Image (cartoon, rainbow, N blue to C red; front, side, top):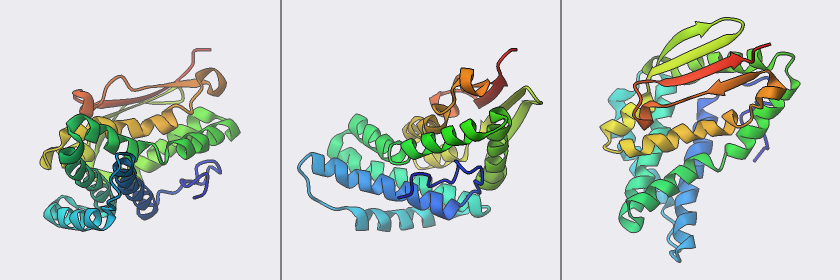
Length: 224
């Protein structure tokens, strides 16, 4: 795997839902097998998991309204499939932890490194990351998410997500407890921000998955 699979470091990032979804689904399903092996179970459930995913996508096909939602549905349902497989074998808490690890950990180092290189190379790191956020809002998320820009100027970009498609999918499939783990995916790029070095800070004080009524993605330049 390339060390920058999302092509962030060059500043030439273009959302590629097919690529990004495949990376994540493969990581989740590989993590299921690794979790079982660590417990002495050599079963390889990959074929069954993929068959279950296809069936679950068909059951939820009415949630697809465009290409981004098709890929976001597939990615989210991969977590549901993994969780349903692991929960009776591991119990709820361990299954949640395993699915979260499979979703977050395979790509986190590359996401963090790519974002850090993007910020370090940018003439204006704040503008670079805000610009990337806006591209993703338009091309990777689309109308199944609702975004409200509470502030959008040269010093602040305060984006509030008031509807999350990921959470909607999980609620519909009786697995809202998976949403906080999905929120953790963002730590990969959040942890790349060094306020004193890059001249801005990012805050996200809650999320819909943690019980909030919105997810605040707030970028703010440091006071001069």
